[in-house]
Image (tube, rainbow, N blue to C red; front, side):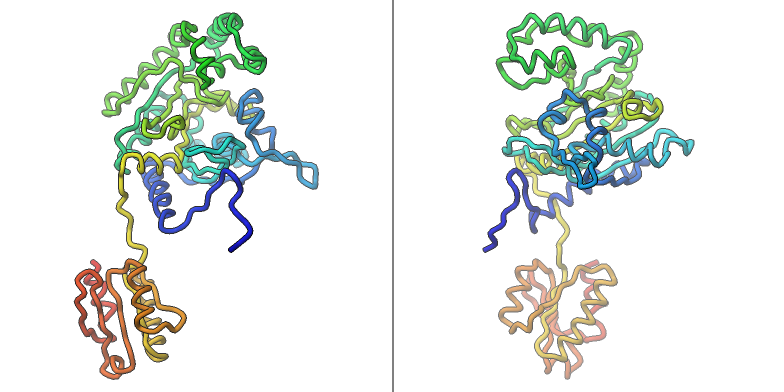
Length: 420
């Protein structure tokens, strides 16, 4: 036994369960690839200042949850706690916005890190697939991303999720609401940390999950009552486009999400089978983020969907994914000549795209057939000296148990035909 274990709040992805995570990532990415989104990959760590400016210095992510460190060279870095700021930084650095084709549409997949209290559905290391559309202010873009996420979840067989939708206004109408909300919150009995948040970012108080705080928020002013005409019209068009696409949603006037950069459209995907950690993904529009991190004005919108949470949602609904067989053909050689011949056939099958494996280690027939059964292969090829002397191998159908002698030179074509 190893004396080392995975760090607290993390997990290892191990076969066969890891296949589910790969299938979820692929299902989320597939609609994006079909909609003009190109893949981007950013470093696992960035400048602390990128997240402080973009995510928000008053957010729990930056103040409590970020893994920050100083390098030997004196650089202050942080493991990335979310994807949007990194992707926008990379797009600006590469001048993708100057290529003349806006919006720049990007998708990504990776691991993210937050120092949180570990519990089911909440980890210190977690996996997300995200999408960002950078450089265009258009309700159709907001609607597109919500529809694509809905499409991804439904392709997996999920049905018991809900989409919550709200508008956070813009630089014209939000300051008026902010002042009204601050006046309301200052009259409540709140702890010192929360009172400080009132002065820095009062909308974040609405996102406080503590029951004692939520009870006091009854009667709080709602942002929808303060939206300017432009934001009302924008939000109504997003709602109309989503509805026309047959995607159901719920208006949630208290939805603010946990990051400072959101403006106008904000949304969250929740699953009622996950208990307190019900959010499986979310996102929104962030029209001012580019300027916050030193770039030009680039109105943008995006989302991130949790792979871990999505797997838990599938389990909660009892959805079994149809996963491709990791092995279709398993070769069992008996003797040195058979090892050479069957290894060549396995290599040939793999080149043709057939998932094939081999009995390594010189096992006898009984042990090798146990391995063949464990592999889940549909067919097993067995060959010994007598078989090869006759120019054949034995092809066994692992479902029916039927065994047939097939010519050595015909076995690859025979398997291709049987496997379709």
